[in-house]
Length: 452
Image (cartoon, rainbow, N blue to C red; front, side, top):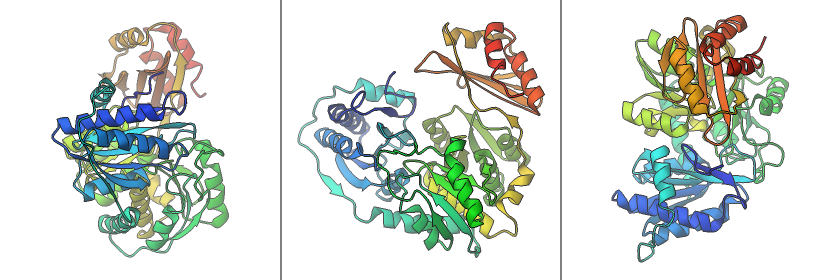
């Protein structure tokens, strides 16, 4: 399994990642930056046990490549991007494994203002043996970067959602990640009554992986929302760029519904970028306002690239990433949380009441099916005969009357992933049968995974 993913680097520390490799990654990134006329990078890292040593090795490699480093320290990922914007530095690098369990670490980056996508990842991999450029550059530590960020994110949320908010009680779960001890403070300073759980840094994520996209990981938060009679619940991932949002009854509000809520409350005729796994409520709501909906492959780098290239107002991934024009197309879990909190706090309705008109279709989670033959061939077979309106952004996605189907191949293992939306469970089954009619053996394995 390669550590070089579509939009980042990710692997197990001590088995796939080590300090010498991160030194080489630093030199490769340095060569990429200098090759585009850059001279400096903004560097940060999360609070995992393995991050300090890997970050230092990466920093050394960047310096050896002749790149000056603005060191933001160990802070949430959006804070590093904030530092880059503040310094007008288009090269941003973060040592993090995001939502993965503690034995993982990795690398997110942006070079010359462009997010990591497969072409940049391949350039990084190909440059691992980049030579030392000459005299080492300097390090410039950044002071109080989180405090500056906190002040900015509060003012930005107030500007985007004006008004005098009510003092809502909100339960905050940083999941032991980079926003532990910080998210609750920012929400409190913004005028909310923040109750926190799992608010101490867990550098090894011994209790659970910091992934709020897994519904089961949100059960403690849901219970505490009900216990506290809070108006909302918030859970942030390990590096703080994603957020899950719960209503006053502890029910999960899906990212697509949050995106529609924000688009309706904040924007007129918006341009919205959405991940192809998103429920159809996003595209239909945006179209109804006369805006533009722009579908992209799943993956942070793809969504952010489209945000930049399309000049889009808002972006969403099903994993809980929210992207904003005000961030130069970037994402920020805490900004998204503050915006939704202010929308609710300035309305006469609960979050559940605000979301109710948006609705929710019948939709499956990702269905993973092992395959014995090359997935690429199966995808071509499906695409040739599945009917509907077919997109080949990533895999095969076909739209039908009242629903859609998606098939993608894993790049790391012999598995295909499927996702379906329809009017109800019976309609989903009908769509799946039509979509996979040309591959009956595969269809049988997929159909047995569908909900009844």
